[in-house]
Amino acid sequence: MEHPPASTPGQFKAATRDAWESAAQGWDAQTPHIHRWLADVTDVMLAAAQVQPGARVLDVAAGAGDQTLAIARRVEPGGQVLATDISPAILALAERQAVNAGLGQVQTKVADAEHLDLAGADFDAAICRLGLMFCPDPLAALREMHAALKPGGHACTLVFAPPQDNPCMALVAATALRHSGKPPRDPYQPGTLFSLGKPGLIDALFAQAGFTGVRTTAVPAVFRLPSSAAFLDFIRTSAAPIRQLLAPLDADARAAAWHDMQTQLDVFQGANGWEGPNTLLLTVGRRAPD
Image 1 (cartoon, helix red, strand yellow):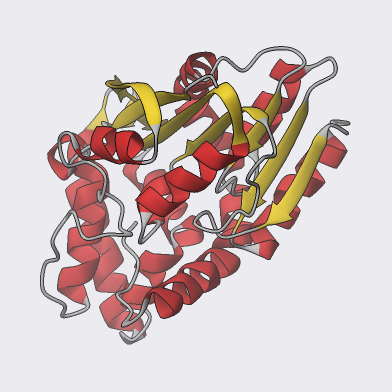
Image 2 (cartoon, one colour):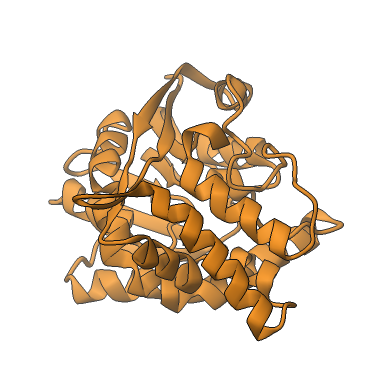
């Protein structure tokens, strides 16, 4: 979801960190829904990054660690995963999940994606699932991933395609802005949900970061839930920036905003439940061999 604007990159990152700190428990509680939503596309992402047994993998903006566990299982035996995130609270959840799953090959590091400080770490692969678009300077983050890879290593990211390809997400963000009295925003504003959806942009950034063989594929990722109310509960509990937009409103005004969202989201309700269409952009690139 869209993050509140800030006057400096430092303030923006502090707001981003605080938003995910506040949403950490809610995001963790929604992990089963998130896993079902993204399991197939995560498998595609890890295959594209050539994550295989014995590999050392960097997971950037790992969040609560759903994909971290998938990586850890894929690199067994002998592999390692380093999960990084700007939010200590949400990263602690990833660490807890790994411990509970008995995946001792997972390590964590609190780090800004734009300042990983992992140059020369020689990872076999680096991935970032639905995190790169929240970086105010995604080129810096891609350069950090490139520097952390060994020669010949692969990086793969997933970001949201343009708003028209993600109507339920776009609807929620636009409705929250309207009810909060804020004007519509440029959908490609840096650091926001759709910031890397502009055609050709992420390919250009990968190339500028030094990657070769760059290619981007649009992949569908339908979010299936029993009802629009269940999706709205997902937003309420885990999308801190949306809650931040509505926080200044009184209780009645907030309730009206949530009701407006649900009414509009009902259009995606069908005989088999609620199906929210989403399209993601999967981009892969390689650090050239020495």
